[in-house]
Image 1: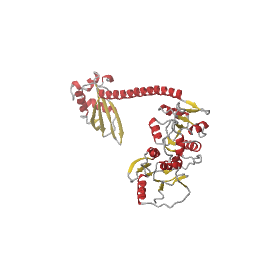
Image 2 (image 1 turned 30 degrees about the vertical axis):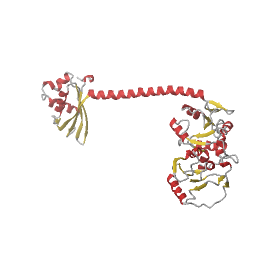
Image 3 (image 1 turned 60 degrees about the vertical axis):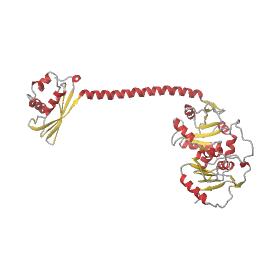
Length: 423
């Protein structure tokens, strides 16, 4: 009689090795024959099978090279002590058929423990599935509501009907992106002053808007983003440049990467110098003048003397002068080498004492907000017209940078040193 699997408590697992070719029936016969009378009537295998307290003996054999080897399993509903006694009895068998044999009881497995483990593992899988489905459902609801709000908030600006955030007309600063999906993604994280150009053919309404607002171009980190950026720099009045991470798109990056990209924006003229992009500007206008023209109308302007840069003595960009490098400037050169590749700037006062070290992207703002206490700037970047205008206005005496950019007006009061001059 076969034991009911529902009542199985333990599983005896044994290994058999015989010096000859044997069959499954030989093994079963040896087990019954050589254990008969060994353990008394209570643990006689035939009686145990008749009462369904042990199940069928299963044997798996493989013969190779004139020898046989395999496994023996026997399910039981006996208690733990009786089961291990039965397992130990298997090891008393020394012959199977005409061959010498060795049987080793390898394991007495508690079937209930195995089942319990399977139940626990399956329960974990089911629980994880329920949790994940709950998350997806919750996220779907939130996303559905959020997207509905975004679609309601998105507007069309100007005759070209450019997709834009609801604050595009009243904000003093705007963000230019490529397409409608970019605007929606920024709206998702509360950025409501973005406008899309829809490709490299920049709409006239966007060009006109850039003349009045502080403008950041925020483009994808791929080849398409580069092309749009070049078009924007050459046709529109861009003040700052921000890029999505390499190969990523503005429409799909999360909030953290959006905020990081916008925080790390750099002045447009510096970006143009770095990548050798020619930017057309009105004759006689510098970036500083253009940015000032874009300030909010209600911003108060300080009264008093005219800006020094309006009366500054200028020298032609093409005028050659002999560079005499002092020992102090050589020290600045060492500092420039130390910060090379870090995109950092170091500010010094008139006593050559370090004031602070800042990211290059914050340099122009730091100079504009300073109390004319900065005498020297050493920075890992390109010396631009805009930087020189601000430096001259703030009485900076010396600027040490990597190289000179496209500078038209050279203020006589600012000493300019490049890395090449220090070599």
